[in-house]
Image (cartoon, one colour):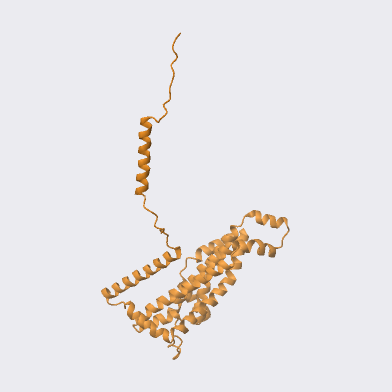
Length: 299
């Protein structure tokens, strides 16, 4: 009878396993010892608005520093301090009036804004309905496309002699230039917006037998509004740019004429003040239209 081998399990742990376990426990203790104790502070990212403010301030500081360096090196451009002192004098009484050719900067800005408002308003009254019709009817689009392509690249000041020929006066001629140059962005963007409307929407309106007014108020206008506002923003920017150049040539009261008059008087610091004034007003006009677009946007 053969002997059967019997396996006997030892009661204690194997020596190799015990050694391995001690090493693992020691490693855990080392990691705990190396891990720093929490201090209660967390690194937080700065708010987005704070980063934007800091970036804006840094950009302004860099611009003023570069301006000061240029003024010191060139000698012809007045530095920031001189311009600031002149601005304090000018804006201390911006609405004085000592005759038609000697008025404060406030009256000149208001005169320019009045011309821009009239010319831009007339252009919007014509361009927006025309843009809807061009976008809605292919036959009108085919007719208008070559005319717009031909006249849109024309320099704004090229229209000024035509305005003087038609109206025989500087003020209506400047308004006429604003009117013509404000047309194209509003016409083009409004027509593009109408073209982007899915045809299914118009098919449903036809099936429901909706009137043209109902189609306009419920489908066309809400869908085209973002495009139309974009055209309005572009047009107001063009109008504000053009009025300065037009007033330099036509004379009278206006910010453009004020710039040219100060150049004749060799007051370069006043010209720089006018440049900043024109830029700030243009920025305010654009931001006002942005707020208007957000207020009347359709979600």
